[in-house]
Length: 232
Ligand SMILES: Cc1cc2nc3c(=O)[nH]c(=O)nc-3n(C[C@H](O)[C@H](O)[C@H](O)COP(=O)(O)OP(=O)(O)OC[C@H]3O[C@@H](n4cnc5c(N)ncnc54)[C@H](O)[C@@H]3O)c2cc1C
Image (tube, rainbow, N blue to C red):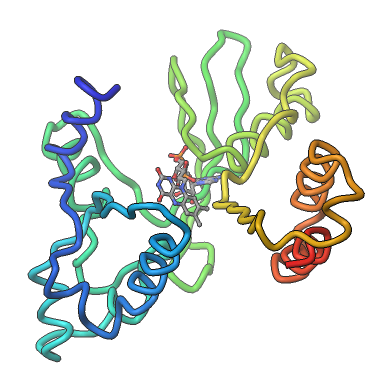
């Protein structure tokens, strides 16, 4: 991973870390606070690689283009091309190869197999406001699914339960996850009476259980529970 695949991805995605002159700007106040707190805790923070085009980001801070990366538009979408996302690399290169075509605005509603083993893919074409423009069925001899953990599971589960792909086994629908970021911090030197009363592995298991509570409870509430548990 370190010697072959990571360098290959790094080259493909043109990875680099935040330049010093941007790090000092107001948009990265949170990074400076993070680093300060990490240093205070005895760690040495290191800059990690990212997929940003820093020239575009610099233009934002000079108001030469639409502000996006510097106002928090990162994980859930960037609007001015500063993020070197898959539309600018892998998908673009795939289309340029001539073997791939990207159909934007299409949603797969169902998958099945006909008597000859040909896969049938039910598709809806939508406009950007979600209005359905067209419905059609595509067919193929081999079907590779990449609708993410949730989307792929949903389609497979529906196909099995409707009898459209009856050979799918009982494990479909299990073991999927959101892979959302989760971080847990414990200040060991500030633990109070509860810390002394509870055996550490018990507290660790309690933290995991709190983290696994349904999403609707909300992350702030989960954090509060964990803070109470450790009296921090
Ligand atoms: C908030 C957040 C932050 C993250 N940060 C990082 C990070 O910093 N580094 C990292 O390595 N990983 C990170 N991850 C994890 C990473 O994003 C995922 O592991 C990765 O995107 C999974 O890729 P994928 O192609 O399997 O699925 P996805 O990226 O989820 O792609 C699935 C695609 O299929 C589409 N789709 C779904 N259902 C259908 C359907 N029925 N018809 C048509 N299309 C459909 C979806 O719209 C989506 O475009 C993060 C995840 C989250 C949620």
